[in-house]
Length: 250
Image (tube, rainbow, N blue to C red):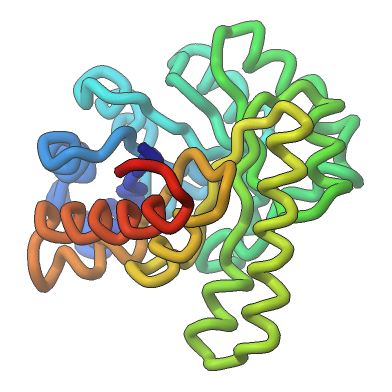
């Protein structure tokens, strides 16, 4: 089975818009676990625009499933994560002016800046993943840095699909397929995320080597209309259909 992780950042976005305590992202995470997700992702940003420090502490203590701590590789975040000791840390690029993460981490150009952060997290017993573009140089840099997991950025592919740019979407998807194959051959575990909806999740679940999908904005948005439980069930069904095309029993 391919794993499903839910990102609860946007529950916190809604809460923070009113400056109050509801809706609670930890409550959303617990409900998601009850309905069968395999893990919870949350991004603690430098400006705390959605997830807050206390959210991360509560998620780690209360959800009963692996916590994937998304973070920039800054000294502050590395120190916080080393104290918290979540199951995994996914290092991502971060700019204050962006609405959401806009691309993969520059693991090639920033290799020597990332190396000590990765080493510190690994020494703390944390599984490190890198959010990267689907390219061979990025995969090779991840191996050199000692990260056992990469998460392939699927945003460009999903955007092209939604905008009806078929040729561009096909080219981006080919990059994802190739990167998954190459990454597995290099000994990496391959995850994927950003911009995925039901249809995209079904398609990418058919790609050999993909072990986990991390999805946030779409699922939280759909949950407004139908509830989180039905959304998780529909996403699971879409992923199962993709796995059947991969030739793996769902």
